[in-house]
Length: 81
Image 1 (cartoon, rainbow, N blue to C red):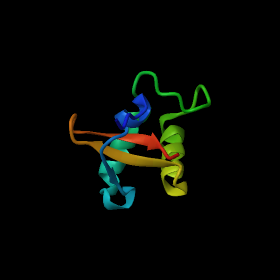
Image 2 (cartoon, rainbow, N blue to C red):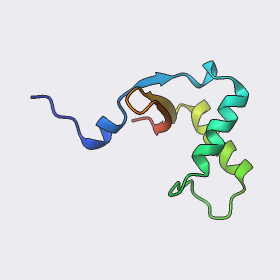
Image 3 (cartoon, rainbow, N blue to C red):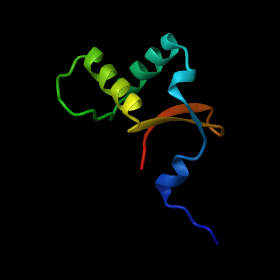
């Protein structure tokens, strides 16, 4: 029986290259992500713009990917392994 770790199950979905998403849509997706309750992006007191830049840099560096979950119909930013 093939059992996945819980965190792997949560990451199941379709990876969407960030370069294929309209820049305005990407901006809004990142803003929504960084303003979620419980999101920890490092420095306390960072501005929204700083947090958005951090996520954009992580996408460009390949440290983060966008995964679309077909079950919940939501997209999420997921660290690469």
